[in-house]
Image (cartoon, rainbow, N blue to C red; front, side, top):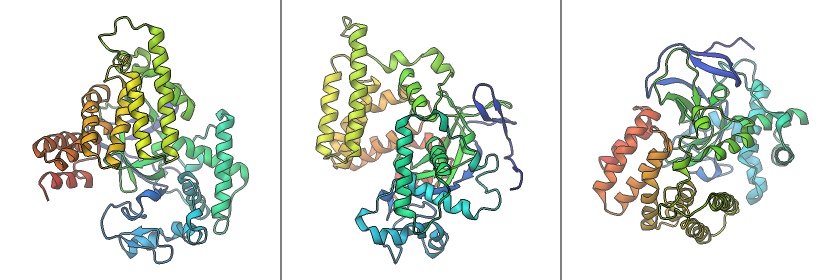
Length: 435
């Protein structure tokens, strides 16, 4: 393959204590695009079929369906033809397996990567700095649970794709699944709904910080890296791999569990926001440290129990009851702005939205909104998506002026993180004008 052509304004270097990293060779202002990267490979979530084009990830009405499987949808014939080399891996199988066709998104993505690798002869536009095969996989760091998960993925790959795909050897498959585990990106829309899974090799070079100076957002099947702080020549660029709402101990546990490293950023060293994030009730001066630690453990277990129940697609009313019971349990000790309470309130809001209980969703959302603006960085997708959801809820409940105000706050953040010319921004402006 040809040598890397590089990216203007961006240099790859050895970041002390972090391995490979990226730094800028010129200054970038807030909201400025540093670079974009097309997906090397990607897959649309099954839940989004019929709403979003499988090829270009455009969200529109009136998509045309595949005439054979009737499951995949496209903008037009051109998108369908472009997507056929990937869709053919699944089209016949979906017809044969019917309702039993259920590979995970990770398995679907790896199948497409294998298909592309088979025919790749030169460096792709997604690999200007880093080849997919050179992505970090942390094979030696994996515990037994993750090794078993990889084996299950490989079994799923053989089960659903063996008729249309020639596989590399077992070790190569283990390596590939490990690389995707560490470097796969969940593609999200403006409300942070999961649209699919993708891999962007050049973006994978970005190191993590809990005080990020860039953010990764999506424009169709392209990832874009934009500045959320002023960045000076020679500075390393950092994104956040994780949700920044949580306190230092939780963040480090998440980073170690998924990415096999600890963070030593300023926030992780100073823990300056931890007291605010694990806020206890002012009335409870007599609450001791043991009681707080016990309640933190309860909250973490409750969050994990909820996640497992949600994955099993339990009844929405049962999930809402779980949220309400855990909030009630935490309330005597934790303030309403405590992140563990906020987590369950946010889940409750989502369930209310799903059940079309808009009054309930607003009630929870109003409790979440203000603490979010304190606990997240200024240009946060989490804050923007909350303003969006709340604005649309207010308008649906005939509280138009309140709704427009919330949407304006969302717009101000979205223009920075997505870019002023992004479809999400132009569509929101049309929405606010009532078009």
